[in-house]
Length: 109
Length: 117
Image 1 (spheres, rainbow over the protein chains, first blue to last red):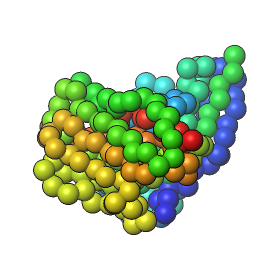
Image 2: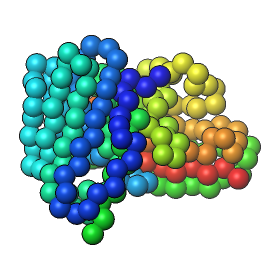
Image 3: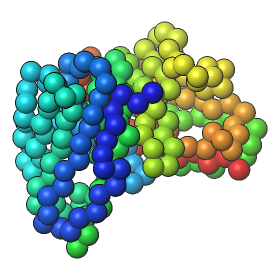
């Protein structure tokens, strides 16, 4: 079963706008990771946030984690057409990752 | 660093035949490799975990006799889909975890699209 549920399932924005996607999970975690997948390709690791962290930044990415609500959000600022992809949250350890359902982001010019 | 390759990137086979997919860690030694399956517009589902030199551990519901996994070296794991059927058509992705590097990260290959006709 999926550990993470993401919303929205799909998101369409214009270039330059910010994109926010959310992930909710069910069990306690040590960390949560976000991945990007371009169409028909493998996954690219974006960022890892540990359970004792509330917010983390990496370039145009900002990830928040609220362990009391068992939720995380990924914000992409000043989006670009190249950000068009599916984004997945994942929980677990390097021994076993469980992925969320994913958000398909479309950034149009 | 931490590059994982898969071969082939896509394959079409006839129903009843077997297909082998290779997963290689190019610049690191992978103690553990993972095989995932992804249907269109869906998430990745872990099929099995393989450790070098030992038998793979399959997730519940995955037929080990149908999806044969071999992890013969620290840089190569193979997934063989035996007696393939159209319902096996999917995107197969491998990932690897190395001896070194962040303990929580897996490095993913580009995937193999299998179409069974």
